[in-house]
Image 1 (cartoon, rainbow, N blue to C red):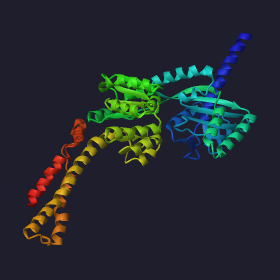
Image 2 (image 1 turned 45 degrees about the vertical axis):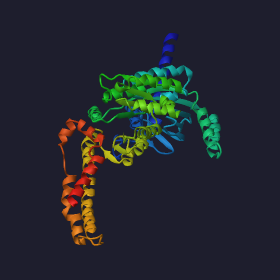
Image 3 (image 1 turned 90 degrees about the vertical axis):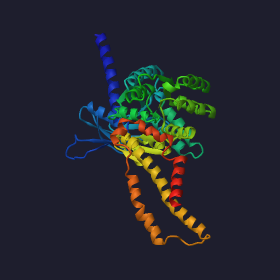
Image 4 (image 1 turned 135 degrees about the vertical axis):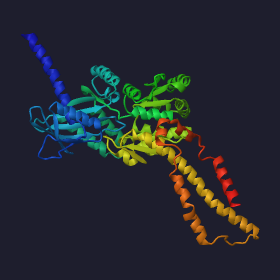
Length: 492
């Protein structure tokens, strides 16, 4: 009879872990439920800054652990038995690009139990959980990342009332310290986040929009170098890069990851330089920080990376995204365009010469901070190849025509003054000059700004037509001198 009881105990322990894991998904987040129809309680809509959090809350709801109410002070969930459970929010530590984790301290109102939930990237969470559970994190995250999923580690810690009261006093005192606030609060959080119990690892699929691969292939054929800056793991980013069309079949992947020494990074860049023209560079944020540690290594990195057809930076923070965008323009002297759809892309969009925001599930932060806003990624192809090309060519001709029409009048007036002994008399009266500048030369302006040298279908079919703009032939010293000669000849 002892053996069955032992097995039942194992099943019960595993069931407790699963229950706590699903409960953590329903509680550890910043999601707010809304009910458009007050009469229908089943019609609920979730609002959050991250679609990943909404996906996890909906998964918990599918397992009969649904979120019913959320505000600054409490969270109410409905458990599998149909009962409402109320949790008081004692402390909340939101996710940031520096910490890469989110934590919340809750108190169960009915039982008075105190619990601390923590979720975040596996690179940070490995040091927070118990040592015997760290191997599971690496194995599980690698398996999920190889399938192209975005991973997140969930953990919990049960707190005693004495420990929390003591910790809370010290944390409040640390926040009120004017001299060493950041270090003291970091020490308090480090104590709270130690010896966490691993509950599980989640994997969220990051679905690509329609025609992403077609758009990226067209941009590359147009002579535009494409970099992908993402916060995902290297394995996840590799799957996304392949499915998004960053890599052709003949182009191998070259990895630079988990490097901590500048010497190793320099040697790896030397290896990459021999195959840079035909390889896709995959580098993580940690190695990128090492490359940015010295000015010489930074110059070497951008000199080699800009030779590659495409570059993918993984585990990239929003600060690094903005810094990379700035450095590319600094070292290459080229124009940069940043495309993003979330709040973590705002810094990159503001730093680029042209910012393009996509209105997506992650909100409108990127769209509001950008120069151009589009609804879907596939519209980028028409925006750049068609409208961008026409805008450049029309602006180039129009600017030179404006100089041309003004220079004709200047040449006529100059010759007239020279012939008549530099007399300061206008050859034309004011009405004629006004009519010339507005009415007579108005129609050529309209013809220039509505002119199309080829059809839209031809530009979409042959993206290489866009690469001709990069040579600067439409607006150069040669074309300026030609228009100047026309003005002098006609005016004379």
